[in-house]
Image 1 (cartoon, rainbow, N blue to C red):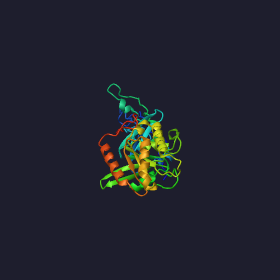
Image 2: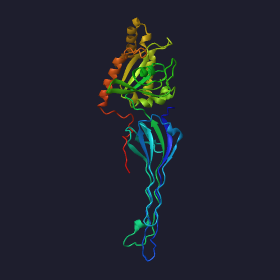
Image 3: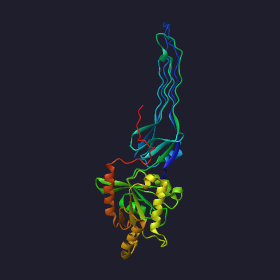
Image 4: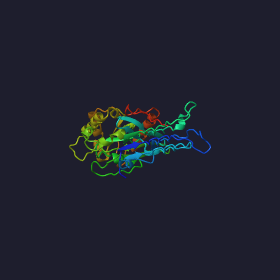
Length: 356
């Protein structure tokens, strides 16, 4: 199935039904009085996070979502029926933005929790509503109130604990396939990954974390070059970034240090908060480096990078060095989960379920 992480839709709640102006007219009851009922409430539009969905492709083709109007009131004290609400199911992690107001309505983080998107209009009042001791034959009635209509932007940001970052062909897909149940496409050419992949890493029967692999970044990604910039948003909810570096590039003229510094530069240009996340260096493809040259090459790389953080030496293909990396990542993620995770954007408010 095609991966879609952005969509624009129109959502409209139903209008309320009009009130009725009616009088009771029966034989032998000359002063029956008013009996016009109120109109029914229009249907509302709700959004619900569904853990069984992982893409917004349903909303790429179905762009108009409209609830029905409430029924009008009738005579004989009959109130109009309220219209049914409609529920839009979206993947967990979807951000819903009102395009006209340029404000975030909700962020769907809790599966099954309903969030009100467009409120249905209330029904109008019938003349039964206006009767009193001084107004015994009211002829007033009101139309129903209109329902809300909004143009919405849907943006999916996957929920993952760890994000893989690096140049194309750095071995990210090989790594996520080696440590998790994900099976992304792996080939010996760049830009093999065309959309984010999620994998669950099992450290123990009751210990696990989620890894996200996004398409590789290239120089100029912050300006829209390549594919990776389209999916960097999926790393904004992660607690840790693993920066994979190809220590044995096909082209000997390529400098891994320059590539790594370029990735960090593009990350900072794209989003300061993403750049400031905890980031570890993972030196990959060491199986392709002669054993007698490994120590010197790693030492030279760390020195030229002026790197002060954790460094892991691995080979995703042969699984060398993966166990220490997995356990270190789990310990870090477990410690981070005990503290509240900062929101990637101060505009985003916690979603609040609204009841009728």
